[in-house]
Image 1: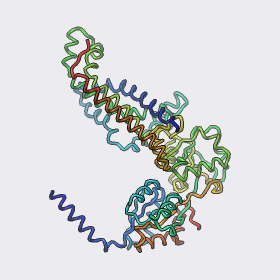
Image 2: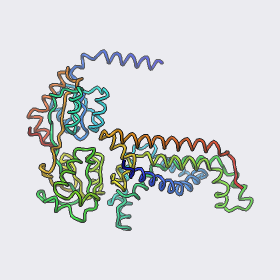
Image 3: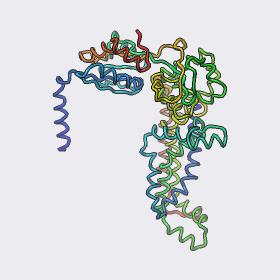
Image 4: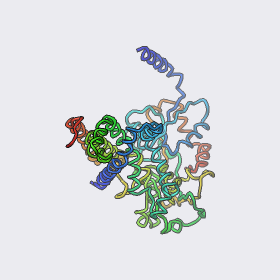
Length: 249
Length: 224
């Protein structure tokens, strides 16, 4: 009982400090964008206290719908922010594309020519090609569209293995289980990444947009609105590009 | 509605249980009666899947069973096929993560049978195997029922490991738990409800059966 009493005391003391923490922002960010977002937060400035909550876009969306205390939402698609704006849980007018992902064909153990034709690389000897699940992950849908556009979807349908997200597709290739994977440039551009990759032309698939939106809770929070503004600034965009995303709107 | 994943799950759970009982019985027997100092280590190893997050287990199995891993490479050399992304790979993964659910009930059942009935059987001229089949196994029947049902149900419900090791290939490694996850994520709740409610009802009935059966099995009954 004494513990509970103390806990209540501490909680009420914390609640009392509310006005002092006005400069804090809670950002729900799709897991794939967490690392660039950390860099963006550092660039944003030290006087704001930004907390990042990362998870799957669908998971974060469900949390927000059920009243999670977040100010800003950065999704791995445009759809979920749009739905939040439509249902009045976020300010629809604040939605914009922070970054666009780039799809690459990656092998962990082959040397690929940077301008090689993807159809030539994906020969008959390939046993498994890893992609993210098209039904669940934007990178998976982009991979599916690209394979269809290239006319090799049918050929590879029986050799595709699916990760829940692009991180799992990456793991399947990194561990040598799949010879190739269609993954994100942001995952493989680091020099320490084994193997090599070829960028899939962005004309082969719909844009892989990461959209941000100001949630209702953040509407009255100046720090949240200035973070949203900062994300579309040119210093932020050049930072985002360094992580393998397009940010040229 | 696509029932393919349901059949794959049922097939996987059945095969897994058979393997679990075949491997689990001698191991549980050894654990129940050994005085070896290795016993604690083996017990800890057996219990590991209870505490490890499925993604950890899945990731290590992906490495271990993959064509670059020690087990996977051997298998590729032997058969020309890979273990990961195959039904056999799923069986191996399932056996590993359901291991404690089969071994622990068997071990405690053997422990409660004790040495006395076996020693009595030996005095009457029964060989050790004879004594095990005719005396110890029937006495440990409750343990077997629990091990079979828990091993089956746990395999049916597992998700994280099979997703990593199986690659979610429709018709080969796409099991019912992954199908449900996909439907929830894509907001097709009505489909998800059918499968989820089915799984829930099935699991409840199975567990209910265990408790009913276990109540009906007298603790000390030796079959003539």
